Amino acid sequence: MPSPLPKHRLSDLGLVEHAQQLADSQSRNLRRVVDDDRRDAEVYEDRNSGERTSVPRKFIRAIGLPAAFELVTLDPTDLIP
Image (cartoon, rainbow, N blue to C red; front, side):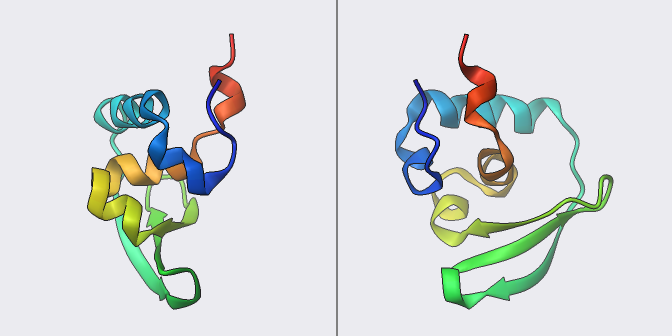
């Protein structure tokens, strides 16, 4: 079962693979809004939906921005059969 805690999401390979598949299948137009220095993150907005979220820089460096955005916005309870 995937870990619901955001800080453990990067270590869950199944969750990361799912986020990468979502990033490949969805066309998001992401733009950086502001730096979130308190959380060592950057706030990105999907121009298509208007959704904004804080994406940790660690995630961006590890798996790339599109997959990191999907990983942060992903609800792990949707993956439970």
